[in-house]
Length: 193
Image (cartoon, rainbow, N blue to C red; front, side):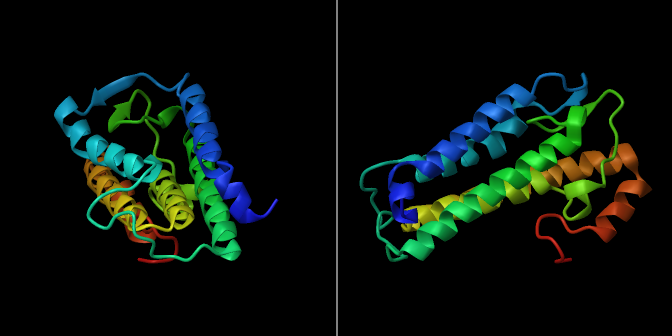
């Protein structure tokens, strides 16, 4: 089966669905929460993220030129889209597994919270967001329409807002150890300060 046929057959949505199921199952067994951000704060980054997901998942024409293609339908682009999406989701899974019980879908401080700086966290401070952004980019390439570009921009803005809040909380929790980590390791893009 060609990469284009795999994309048309729904491989990328299937990868996302497998990721969602894994994410839901792995949410069990995390450490109890000591401090959690308020609902209004969660909505500030959650609503735009759902808009980005809608832009990628929507079928049918969208107004404002969002359904216009910016990429041609080429087999090599379909293969690239599959590879980027798979690599991004797998990187996020690796980060989630490495984080263990410290993980949370919202900004929290856990009981016995530890500063994790190894594995994918030695490459970037927010590898889950890095992986998801890569998967969003792969999905946008698969669609090849301007709505995919908008989805990536909206998702990136959502993640940047959330990571800034997380980093403030981590500096409060871990002080100089976290500041030193920030000096050594970039936030989202490996090897870029």
